[in-house]
Image (cartoon, rainbow, N blue to C red):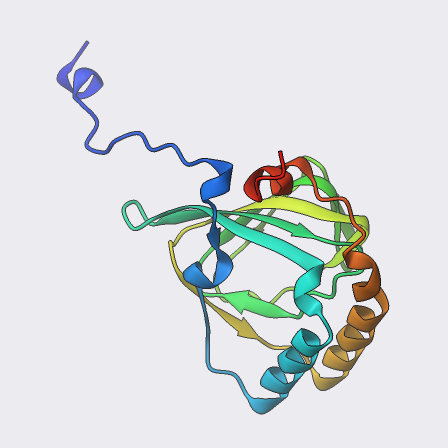
Length: 179
């Protein structure tokens, strides 16, 4: 073996437990937005929007710059159109996310480059996925038209009453100490 093969690694192996997951707001910041975006988001929050998802930052590192996030979006969750300041790679664990004509299910992947606007709708069982990012921290910028915010508000009002009844996936139960 040559020296490159036998050299000691410059970084240590790190293990993070499910229960050590951080909150999304620790990794994300809201980029400046116009009033339409702020008003739309405020209305969703007031209608129990946050009951429709669980998002945990599982791993975050400045060197190399990366992060790993777990997400579970419940059935009928209205994800506003937005972009991030970092490249993202999604891996669907279970359920379904629909982007226009494309439906992604368990085992499917999707790459979203930094700055690309996107949204998706959840399938009847919701969607559970892992998101790899090329940065430990990033900005989110919302860009939904006014009509889309109204539609998303109606979806939230329709589905929020049932979101508490959803059985969390095993990963969520481990993160919250239920298992």
